[in-house]
Length: 546
Image (tube, one colour):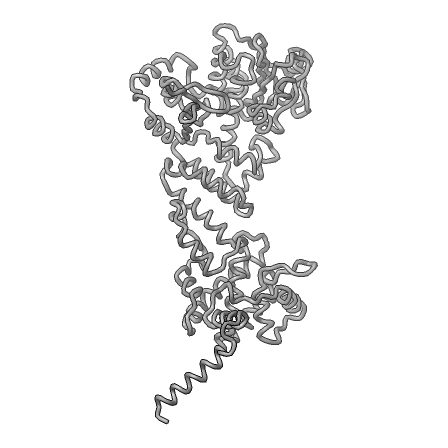
């Protein structure tokens, strides 16, 4: 028999032993062969043992005596490092003593590379599952960091073994996943909608919904967005908030980053979506009990920015919605907005009508002012009161025309803030006989000068601009001469420049809306008014098109 015949005979025997031709077409045999091929060539997701109960038993056994009698036990323990087992919810990666011991034991299998690789795969899956970047467990975070270095240090050894596997190749191409900034490289692509890298990672590295990678890529997008221009950043803001909504683990960190970047902008005017998202998860920064929550994630100036937004909104809500005069009394709205930087606290006392009104605007007011509003008693059902603190003085304004404004020492009041209800009578909000009463001011002709003088006398505070009206008329006339002609493109550019969005309902027979508050910058407001836009409280600016 020559060499060729010997080789042919050897191939024939090999084929018979591998594929068992007597069972070709049998489904079970085909599945067995498939499993054998996957076992030999490997994908990360198919490499793990399927018996979850056995994994749990092995991990708990290891936690008791720290021994791994055979490869099977070692493999099972590797695949169970990040899960909780038993009544005590034991998690191996959070074990300061036994987890490092496991890595030492796995190291011994390098003499049998295939066994080492299987253990490596289990450790890798656990690495992706355990939230080591955010875990509050110090031992867990420390062990996770150790595991990161172990996986990175042994990656080349794994890649050298034959036959090569797809998952180890992909891991090598994305070795950033084993660094302190694992997902930053994906931020820009994901912002633009390119998910190809993440799709490959999910498939080849079997990333589950538990994986911190899927959380970190959200933070990577936020990081990428914060490096863009103000306009580009604001274009991505709504999308990023939507991503953060279900992500409880990273929501606080991500929100903090967005707020701080927004504060750094050239014009950090009120952003309604960012404001409402912050209130939903952190509460109002006007409440003392919420200050620590805010300051845990953002510095004081950023918290003050949002607090100022709320004060702006509260002033607007009161004088444009809760006050009987409504928008016809724009003078009081304009006056108090000039003091927004020195107003440190605001409170509402709501009459019966405002408390019972369940339209969207009134619900929002009660929600935003939670902890800061009380019932107003002893007055007509349609009256409300607005209380503003400047320094050690509390200024009380009533919504109903004809009511004077009263000022009290904040630390010497004839009523108790937060008590649930206030009396809009001579016993409380109008108590001129009380020792803490400082002033009574009427809204007669030229009242602004009297109010300015009284505020300065009592608190030392001056308005942010020198005059509410006269110096603005010249600026308005000049600005009006420079306004461009109205077009859909012009309003979109203008709104985007100031950080607001435009919604066009005209194709459905509706109006054109600019989602911005009344308290926009003066030049922006005059352009809107010049183009025929009108303001609707809490909704924005609207214009009817043809």
